[in-house]
Image 1 (cartoon, rainbow, N blue to C red):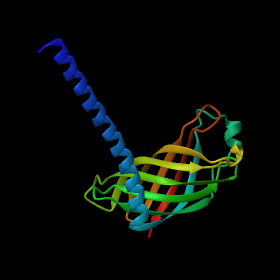
Image 2: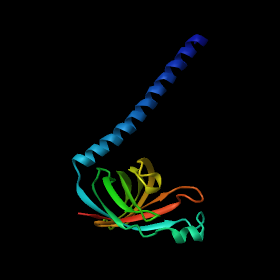
Image 3: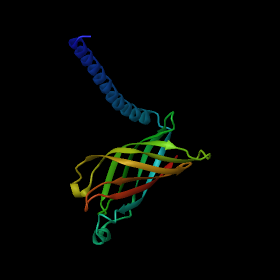
Image 4: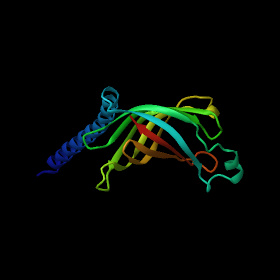
Length: 184
């Protein structure tokens, strides 16, 4: 094969790889949108969210800061959710709770967890995934901002404890936030 022929073949292979990469990206975005739509249109259960835990990282906040923070996130929320054909959890939710400064913080978004059932008891499950949401805080004049955070859970039957970690710097963020989810 000539050098020119080899170059044309390389260009064709590169273009095919680029198209495949774009199709995968479109596939991920399309899958994300489809999961949101299916959860909204065909929910399998309703969820009640009760925030129960705010824990500021003791290695990144001083004792004085921690003593001034609210670590009792009173509030609640509501959502709809479903399990897909692989057993993974999808949800749309809205929640409001008292933040670290004891001001109301609303949050609404989409949650996803890959579910594992490590024991023969199929009622017990563990999950790991993410939330993609919009929130607003008093210390930011309630200007809405997006966030994507990790999500983990342990549940039995219709009760699940879920938690996320809000990363940050030495004086902001670095907060473990947890809630109970009751399915009905």
